[in-house]
Amino acid sequence: MILTNTFKRPYLFAFYVLGLMAVTVFSALAPSSTGNFTTTQYHQNKGSKNLNDSLDVLLNQIKQSFGVNQLNLTIGVVKDGKVILKKNYGYSNPVTKTLFSDKTQIYLASTSKSLTGTLAAVLDQKGIIKLDGTLADYLPGFTFDDQKIQPNKITIRSLMTHTHGIKNNDLVVWTAFIGEQSTAQQLALLKKYSTALPNQNFSYSNLGPVLYALIVAQKFQKPWQQVMDEQVFKPLGMYATTAYVSKANPKYISYVIDQSEGQQKAVFDKADNSMSAAGGHLSTVNDLLRYLQFFISDGQSVPGVLNKQTLDMATSALVPQQSQYQSYQRFGYGLGWEQAVFNGEQLTSRLGGYSGIASHLSFMKAHKIGIVVLSNTKGMEALPHLVANYIYNSILGKTNKQQILKENLASLKGNFASDAEETKEIAQAMQTKIVLDQKLAGVYDGGEKSGTMEIKPTGKVSWGNLKGQLYLLTDSTGLINFSTMLRSFSIKRTQGAIVGVYSNDRYFKR
Image (cartoon, rainbow, N blue to C red; front, side):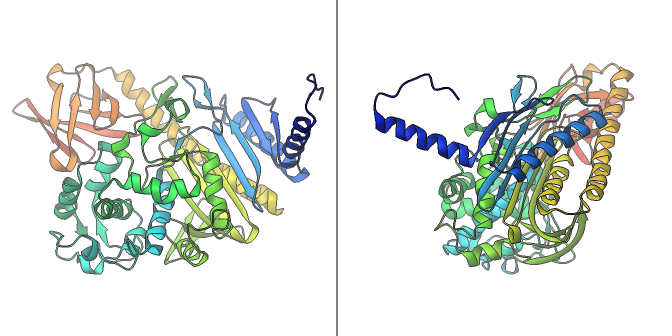
């Protein structure tokens, strides 16, 4: 390095040297010359350098194998209290040519359940909303039309661990897609359309965290999103994490990359009212690395937020489960965290997915390793888990690394093939080119269960926050491509007149 400026004050030169030494010791910033990579930052040691280089090779091979021009993801690794690797590949929004970076705010989908679980741990430790409290305690006087559901037997803990024994898809659809209603309307949906499950065994769904958020809003008399910010994000220094789309920087939001209609599109159909506590946060790789380190360090990285006992409880197997996902043998569930065995090691994780968006957040406490991998491309939803597994196996020197990589590649190919089939289905519908009956245009009412759906003369469809295109396959059937989801469509006629439409199992009356 050549210094072109002479320091006229000796103490300024000393500060400069100290700063330069700190940068040299702790990190190096090196632009990659491979493919469409942006920047790499890794801890200055041989292991991190080797990991960085091997990831470049791996992802280039995947890119070539799948015949894609680019991979789009961001990666962060923390070990022994230090960020040992951060990498950004490709675009957070290819339409605007915005590259993935440390500032990219990506939708976390169900990884949000861990964040909401941390809020539950904080409020329990403070005695504000106790995990052993019941619905009867926090929603006094509230009852369900299905009398098999007894509020005094449903605890806050059961809401957060999916053992509440309640089914209600309508409230989930409103809060995740259409756009949540007022608290009173949500409680009305909960009361009228909830049914009791056969038992209170583990049954994964969005309902528990959504109901918990209602309780938080009632208790604090303010939006649950604001409580999250005050009780979790600000104390942990996660200033780029939010449950409000409106508070994110539009420039840095990661979009879903979709090519289902023959051209590359960037889609983001979330708004403030469809960011639920079960799947409704935006965050960055930097914030999530900080979050992982908080758990790995037993709370010592940010003292005073949660004690070790509460952190151990939140990440423990509070309830049993038995399931296999990717390479993880899951055996327990805590406050938003899953406990699993991966390649002989205990893994604590929370994964999320939303039609192209895929988030991987996990740590191995015994080895003080935490990994964040986030991606945004349809057909590549298994990629973050493949990358995380490869990193763990590389750091731990696992001899079966290549075998697990082979298995994970097969899973990724399954994702890719499934997306290709969906794209093919849409292409066939587009080629059918059945002229839309202009009498079909109008507004259809799905009632309190489903809200309203509007069909334009051009076939453009709006359902809450979802915007899509209708393609007819016959004069009465078709499909709606919402880009982030594909739904069936059919027309109901009475004596030749259009009286309503169906989308999947939901009916909308003219």
